[in-house]
Image (cartoon, rainbow over all chains, first blue to last red; front, side, top):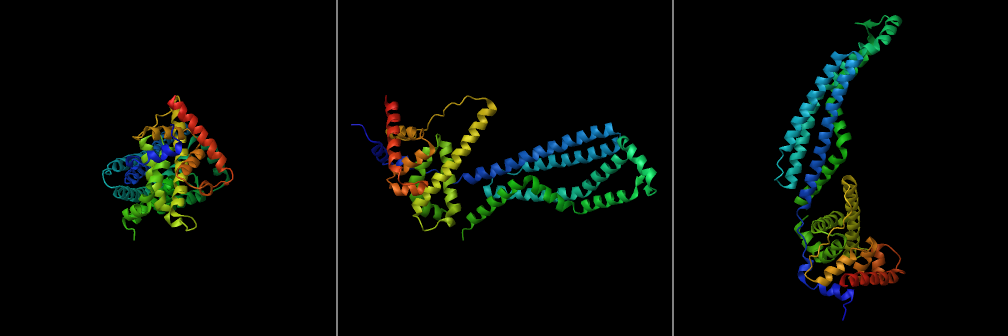
Amino acid sequence: MEKSIESIWKDGFLKREALVAPKVNDLYNRKSVHIIDKFARLFRVNLWAIITASVVLLGASYFAGALIAGSIMFITLMYIAYTAKFEMDALNKVDKGQSSYNYLKSFQNWLNRSIERYGKLYRIVYPTLILSFYFGLWFSDIFAGVRQKVAESTDDLFFGMHSYSSIVVIIGALIMGFFAKAIHRQDVKFVYGGILKKLDNALNEMEELRDPD
Amino acid sequence: MSSDFYTLSILPHAGIIIKICRAYTDNEADFDDYYQEVCLQIWRSKDNFKAESKWSTWIYRLTLNVCLTLLKKTKKKKHFFSAEHQIVDVPEESHTDFSDEALAQLYIAIRQLSEIDRAVILLYLEEKSYKEISEIIGTSANNIGVRINRIKERLKKLLDGKVN
């Protein structure tokens, strides 16, 4: 006689092996690897974006007649890219063989060290980029007309540049340099915010798991 | 997850979690992922459990919701992959890791049902009342009986097709 689906179900699950539960230990391992992989991918994209931007800037500065400023910006950005490559290598060296918790903790430590290092670097990088851009633009061929008009309309000139606007830009660059760490921290939050939130959540959960009381 | 919580609160219901996860996955790796994700979600959401329903009913509901969410994600990934690589959609071979051939065939047939029909028939086979099924699924109890009969008819046809 043909069995009903109800009896196929009941009889089938009488055998114990049909209900063997898989081990619940691998999920966090995979999740932690996933979080770090995602971060590394985004980090690599940023690295290439910096390299591309520096090359584009150098090309643009050549055509705008501001090659010296363009070269300074190019070297500065390439130095950032070199540092990023150095950081990337350090990230790749994080031992994947350790427990998920330690792995994520190592990643968090790497991230904090990296933010700290970049923060210091940007103290110089932000003012350098802003001032190179400003002076480069001011003395570029494409700005010749504006330079002429400013020279005709005011006596407040300093080496041919408009004094007040130059002071504002210099002060702005110095402020950017002074707050470089905080600005960089916000920048990281903006770009990697989603991943960092996942990292915090995963670590909080794991800490709770390690100490359920 | 503390082993006490897993042993005392999840393991007694592992059977139903396994049965549901098997109905929404067609390979062993996905099954392991679904099972682990369900366990993790139970642990994460345990504080949201209110004594309005039974712990087992809450687990049914949570397992179904997690499976349906994961199924959508898996489908999206497969769709993205096939669009990227221009691969023709070939149905994956179903995992038949049951020593009982009839049960294996029944699972293959169940996996061909719609997502909600799968949930309904699993709960029916677990001898849940129409009222409980409607509470878990979140539909009206009136049509559950008719729907179950239709699903059973479809399953019979699918199984006959396999046998023939």
